[in-house]
Length: 322
Image (cartoon, rainbow, N blue to C red; front, side, top):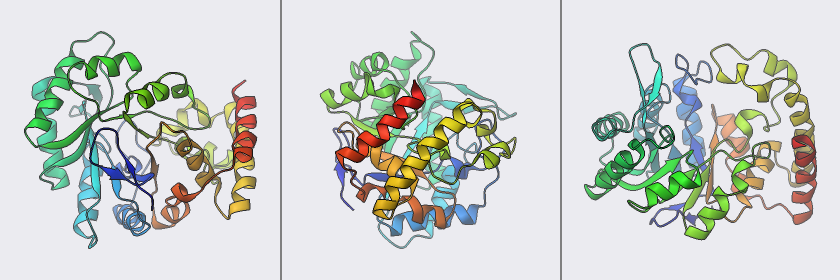
């Protein structure tokens, strides 16, 4: 699988990386419902077999559980170790309630906890998960600490997630930003306006998350399935999975299915390939909850859409957004 350099780093990453959000399981604020650890490990192994060379997780996913599952998968994997990316800055209390904390002492505790859970000596890419409240000095305190951790060899490279351009600039004034992780899909294109052009100009890597809009663009989501999402799945109460948005998005999925059929690919692969055709995007984070799902999406980086196909897709996407 073709590789791309991530920003100013020496990391050569595949266009698609394995996303470990859903494998955190249930029992926390942004869970995807219950999940089998054995299925998760099989999904990770299948992604690696298909050539994927990086895994993106976070401390908060499953309140530490996702990182532990990633560690188990790596222990049982006999091939080359993939890069491991994780995140900090979201802490949870005894009740599992999550809050943003970017104080230096907190980040230092988090990196040690993540290294322990992941069973690693160093994290390949360490990211601030969410920025603090606007104008909070914790951004500077947190990013300075991240730079210190890089200097101390605890992490190899540092990046941010969900930052806007102003926040990226504030961080960049302290230390270089290797990568930015924003949401990006056919139904959430807000980053095209300023974040993607800024990162392209500045040579900052971009790894996008939710390129299939959290399952909406996979081709497997239906009105019936959306209506039956369990209460412990955060999507059950999200407007994207409710009317009137849901029906409009499912119209787009049929166009993705039509184009995918021309290539022998799934609608989800077409959705992922669409994000990867943007010159600012280095890679896309793609989740899979079992090996079968991994088979259906992890080779999306090999799919090349024609200009005509991109125009067909965007014409319908623009109608939906109007």
